[in-house]
Length: 353
Image 1 (cartoon, rainbow, N blue to C red):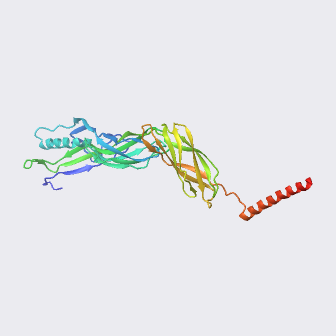
Image 2: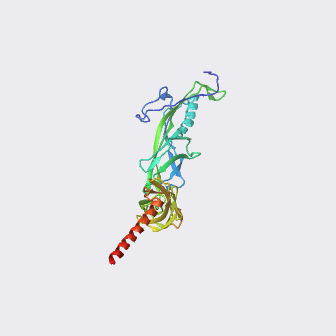
Image 3: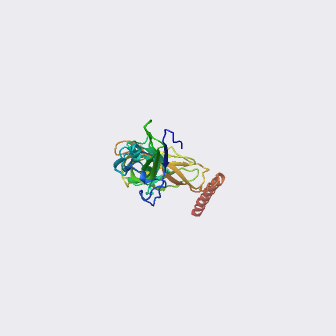
């Protein structure tokens, strides 16, 4: 190192302490505590808040935007070494250390992890980097997490756990050779910075709305290839709120067709059922098997707003085609029966003579 230089060399000692040890368990190697002028108390304090509405519907996949602010503070300090009067090196180093110690409230390299312990709510995103936050500052952009809400989720409040980990400046030491009166600086000043790991845990709450929710509980009707038939579908409101003036809209796809694709259900309160009736045609070349049709329900909610439900599946079975006699056999059969009837009548007349 050039002793005639005018610039200080700063050596950062980034110490990642074991999670099994407390923050003050051990000093990092090469950190000479005898050169420590102050011990500062306090540190970062990250406050996370959800930006925007926290209420969602069943079946939603949403992006949560979480804003972070560092509300950390210096709560106190203790002098560990007094500078002697006239010892300009100590005085300058002592003043410089106090400036460095003020950075103890900065959270460095924030890593955020969102977790859910509920089977109905799943966090699809992994850990997210949130940068570095100084005291009193908030993140320049929200930290984003994708959350999937199961379509069968009961209405209510669901807490999510936000784990934050970061480093902060735990202590600082300074040293130098001598004081240069010409430039008013300490020659060859060195700074050692001791960083520690810190973790915080917060709760982010989301809500699942109370609203109508519909399921198909029963399907009846006999449908054959090349034959029309009536399909009876029972809908149940399994949600928490009533649906007023509910109407089912059916989406028919091959091998089905219909000119009657809507059915009125009326007002369905929680737990109530209603039957929708559809006149369905089936293609003549339809394969006998189970099919799935989509339907949706249009209704008015408790606030008077028009709503459309998520797609509700209807499982419909096409039965094997019924055997029919060919045309000539059918005609011959009719002729035979007519002839038989004529013969019976003729015999009766003969017997009456």
